[in-house]
Image 1: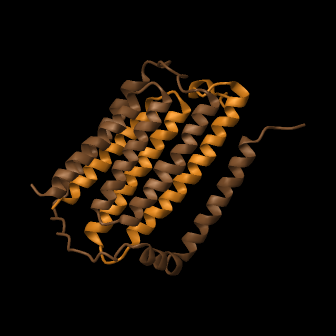
Image 2: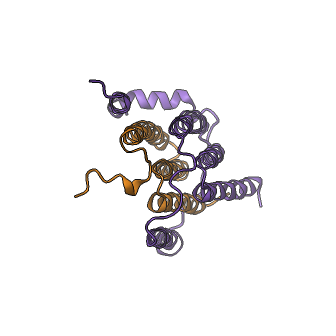
Length: 169
Length: 102
């Protein structure tokens, strides 16, 4: 057992447990905190996969900005304990059935249906996956998707402002 | 070395937990959190496939960054919708939001 393997197991267990904790906690604030833990764990997984830039972006955007937005809305609306209980009794069994079926499909494909041996990974240089190289690719080859993404962010910003503003007159 | 399929099965488990959250929770904010979890699982897959299959080109990381941007805008619009609905109906329970149902 190498160190990476042990680290991967610890991270995987924390990620899955925090995701389950997010589901079972009744209080929305606790859910959001479990989600932050999950995102930070996944950021460490990205570091394990030699993607330091993605890991930092994960921490700043997901665990930082998005979760602050969630907590802000939860506390603004005061709905942290709201919407408890289940109104439709058939809903959780069907949800368990459907998500269980999906994970069985994934497991079947991964462990049985897929026959070819996955390639052994080679070591890559430390500078690889650095912000410079990603920026170069983003501004040359992926310029159009990048610009479309910026338009998408602008539209989302305008839409959020319009939707959340109080109607006057 | 960690096999690629372990990363994939971890991402699949997180995706399914998120899917369960989306399907079974009543709180609209919790549903959005489930969607975030699913997007994150997709990101694990993207980065893992990049690392194991095409490590010489950084496309996987670029896709992951675009998924981040999409997730951020989705959360902004979704939470604005929830705030707007809460103003009208004073609830975030999804089965009580039936304005468009006939």
